[in-house]
Length: 217
Image (cartoon, rainbow, N blue to C red; front, side):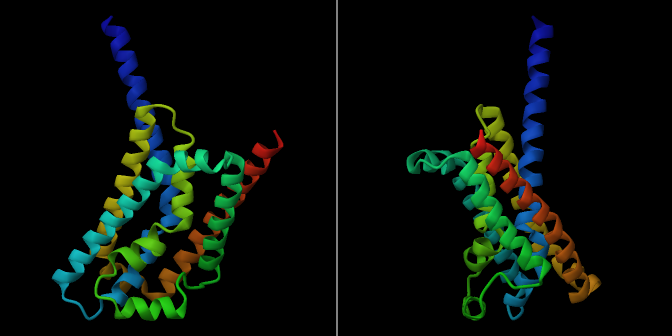
């Protein structure tokens, strides 16, 4: 009996870890918290360190909340609208590909009008930092896709844990990001974004191909 209990416990822990890594690994390159650091510091350049710390904490909380809510209601939204998993993967792949192309070509995620509005805002934690900068359509599409792959509470807990880890990392990068910017400079950060963009483009192609295969079944 005890042996059986230990076996079940090991399987549960393995499942939790697997889905935590899966969620975090899928979200990190698309959310790209490192790429958001320079933008965050440009928006809060004239603010006090204390206010910047508050903004970093609120941004991380908003990112976490947006992604967890999207994950929890995503499956119900798809069911209500009658959207199949294959269609979702293709749509998500196209959005992720668009995000990746912007990174590869060094195209800003925000329009000039949105950027100017962001500069004039006092609280930038929800818009534009959480949406659309970090937890934008690409990241939301990923967590909705993950929600369709979870069928047990331990799998859902694993995905939520992965989202929480991403939120923690967002906070750490925004708080400790200034030395990173000074060390690598605009050129280094730009090069990193382009490399990451190329990898994300590969993920997008994978999502689209899986969606097409799903529809052809």
